[in-house]
Length: 640
Image (cartoon, rainbow, N blue to C red; front, side):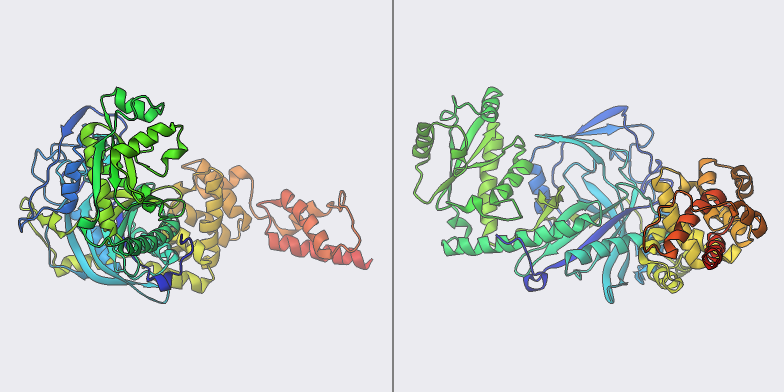
């Protein structure tokens, strides 16, 4: 089992597909409001999906796989955010031009070539996430890049497309979707396979997110940005990890996928060593063994039998030990089989698939296992697998077990895998191919003029790398700059520096780090816009409040919307006093309660007095001036 991986020697490469919801008023192909989420519904629609031929007369393999699941698809509709377009009962409206403009800005930020005409295509999806069975999508820009770790991260293209439904539940052959998110405009940014470590994948996701945030025209929050991560190792195949919600999660997911692929390649070599090279070499025999387990006291089997289901066994000739072959950390090839069976055969009650070598772990009588082995005509080097449920599903499961072993002959099958907590993945579907794409004859093309591109260029804000350079010159820590970009704080810093002449480092730290601390305390500092921050810094640069007063005013104004900085200063009773006034307040300050230890430094005494002094003078005197006053006083007392 490989648990540590030298990424360079393994030939790990990765690329991204970053999906970002756009901040538009309406959806992409209708006039329903975008971003209006609901938790109730007015009606339901039942659909069944079937595949269609591509323009070249071919079926997409993923569509055929989804068709085998025989899913009953339920859509929950709320009249506030869906119309007949989402249900494919009305042709699409003209594409949302606001979404195209945002996509153009995103492309320009990454130095891309903007195409002359936006042509809408259909991308087939039969998992039920889109009621039409396809997603409308269009490429806006191509051939770009971003500065990344001292080199350029290539961006192959940026598309606009409509978002899918939100999954409510998926049990057996029934899947339920909520349609409020359906049709919201997205951009999809696709990078080249330029990333070489899991940490680079994390950093690239963060960078793509910062570029999108820089436009100021994208949605934020959980689900507003989702990443698909493509991973392969030398000798393997492209595997897509679907729906990575956070950049930090990518590190473990990519690491474990690299380990999985290396282990699958080793399994391929073991299969070849056993003489399995062609699909015909994988020989399975399927038998209904319900009678063997009829009286066995295992809850999952008895539930299957009581509900009219069956128990099937699949004998694999020469397959002894293969199910226990390690793949991801703490998982085995048996989990690969279970993933296929769960998705395609819709048998989702644990343990889903049992292997023969697991059976002794259950409280089964010896004669039951012997009877099973005789019925299956087990050879010394054979193994078997048990599935249970409706007969049709069991037969589908038996075939999928065989297909997964056939796929193992090539090493790593091309798959889309679902990300799970803890950095693991499980099978979601076969990786789609080009046969699922075809033109959308319902939508006319949109011409992109040079004037429109230049108008978008004029609206652009500085790129993240320009911001890192600018703020870095001020001495702002990179993590603070990143936070300001993500939260829209750079525009606030710009406004404050331009209007008040405040120091850029000071403004960045106060609006970034210190405001972030206020937010963690539950104060809604996001209410403060450029006007409020300029008012606060006007008082500071005008000498009316000390630096400590900046956050005091920010906290008060956030908690009291509509109150300006001057009124907040008066309400708090703060404001810089003349030196003579606050010095008189400190004249009686003593070292009382200070525990003197041998060897205490003057600095420790100063910190003790300064702490007491700032409690008295918070917001009324600059901390630096107070410290200088106390230092002078201590020196004078020591010389007496």
